[in-house]
Length: 183
Image (cartoon, rainbow, N blue to C red; front, side):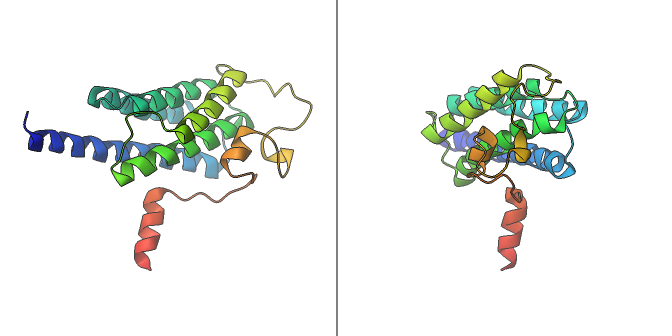
């Protein structure tokens, strides 16, 4: 394979990966703005996106991206029991992880080794997903309220992903780029 041919394949990989991440982000933002639980259709589509990203990345030798996509795909197994509050923290953490991966793909500098900021985001996602268990339907066993009702400064992974805020306004990367082009 020539250098030119490899560069074409790499460019296609980067482009398709950006599209996959944008599709996942748009889907999660839609669920978040609807303030609803992830439906079976939402889950299926998101799992397909992360599964495709995982396979493409592994095939191209980007093991850090493949591992990240694997963690994100696995985290979806804890969603879909019809509990919007229970799914909210996973959605927040998935969006944070997507943001980190998207930044690398937009820059064209996809790391081969797992960056520390990815490790931290994925560790939070894995921890929350493992605490939730597959298809959780029961309310949290804690005495304090979960999610946004926990109030400002709540010590949960979703709040940390939002920089300590309990509420945020989310705009997809594509929408933000369009807005910036208007100025």
